[in-house]
Length: 315
Image 1 (cartoon, helix red, strand yellow):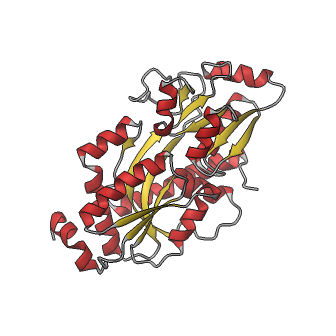
Image 2: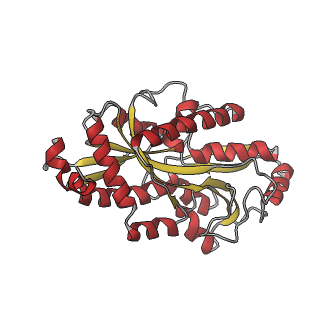
């Protein structure tokens, strides 16, 4: 069957009930990049599958609470997860006990995109680059504070990597999502944040936050004047937040295939691509669910080592 025919016939062929909407669980509070991307993708997939899709924000425990809902749902393709490098990979190494198996509990569908993390500070911090930040942190009588979107998220691990690279102590203040963390950062209640660029871009452009570096190998097209961590002399700090779609482990392969086709068709839409890339996220799709599954396992190996070196543990 041709891809277009499969998309048009998917609900009837695969037994999706028209009166039962699909659920997309976003494991963070509203306002962050996960929420921005997830809602746009959900709208596009719903149109292509001929099914309503309800978006639910279930923040908490660095993504664990939302992921648990999907892992324990019926394996029928009705309950989906917007998972990523933090909410599924890093958090599984940080928490000593999880209410699900981070591998068997999920069926990988495909990638949406990724973006190197942006390191920012509140303007009250007297630093305009990472070397100056290092000097300020070393001279401070108390540790500078950094926020994260939750324990075990990419923003947590990336900032811990930065502290190791600079040889300084930083105090971690976790939040239940990017939105709440960003609110306190702009208010000056915390001093540093390492996170995906999109939700912070406007705050940087208006001067409410100061960008120090991009934690990637190349400058970001959305913020071309911000140097990379390599240029700043801290090349070992490399952290990208990626976003992807998962179903419950054990979901039938035909449903995973249909969801993968709908996802890739959605990500190919020019209007959606423009909106997402303007926010500093590079769109990436997977050739197949199997290809994405291999990537997922490779990321588990890489971030597992980072968590071990940084000694990150959820209390």
